[in-house]
Every structure is written in structure tokens, then in C-alpha cells.
Length: 150
Image (tube, rainbow, N blue to C red):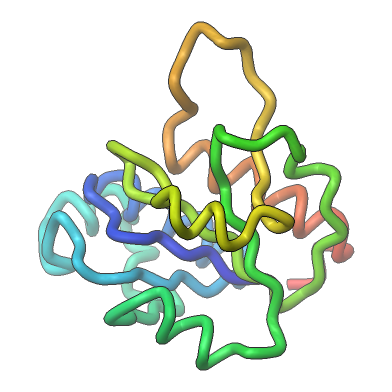
């Protein structure tokens, strides 16, 4: 399984997600630009002593990542769709893409990938769940469907 963070802004979220990735044998892909340096202590603090074990890949663009994985499915987490994350049939090498914390996946990417947009149901009161929580929720559903085959 693969988690993709498109232009992540908050180092603590990336560190937390990295820790989850290590413990589930999931690759973490970071798309530049990022709002922090990977050397920042906040990333490492959130990732604890797991950070050095993250299967980490950095990319200059989402297009570069997609071109490098032409046979994989890419799902885009957003609050702007009705298709629930649990309605998808995940495969072991799928990519789940999350946008930057402050604005989410850009509208043009969502529009170009409507059939692969997924959401986590929630009440209308808030804008969205925390990025690291959202990544964990969707990742564990994908892992459940694929038999937790780490």
C-alpha cells in the first residue's frame, strides 16, 4: 500500500503518518514542495524512532509519481465527493493521495479523477478531520480489505 502526501505543510502530521506507514509496511510518498524540511526535529519527534525506517520516496510532482506507476490505482481523499472510502475495492499496490492540510487536493486534480475521489463521512459542522487521522482511517480499511498482508 502507498500513502501520498501532496505538498504537506505540517511536520507533525507527516511524522505521525510515517510512523503508521512503518508499522503497516506501507510506503510514504511526499510530493514537493513541502512546508518544512525532512530534517526538522518535529518530523522526527512525531515519527519517534520509527522515522529512519520509513520507506520514504520524494517526488517533484504528482504527475511524476503517476507516470512511474502506470498500472496502479490512485485514490484521492477529499471532502468534495459522496463516494465513501469504504466503497472502494482496494488492491495491494494502490496509492491513496492526500492534499495539503490547509486546502486539500487541488480542484483540477479532483475534477480529472472524479471516479477515484473518496471521502470519510462526517457531520457538516467541521471542515475535515486531521490529516494523520484521515490517512490512518483509509489506510486501515485498505489493509483490512487486502487481508493485512504486511
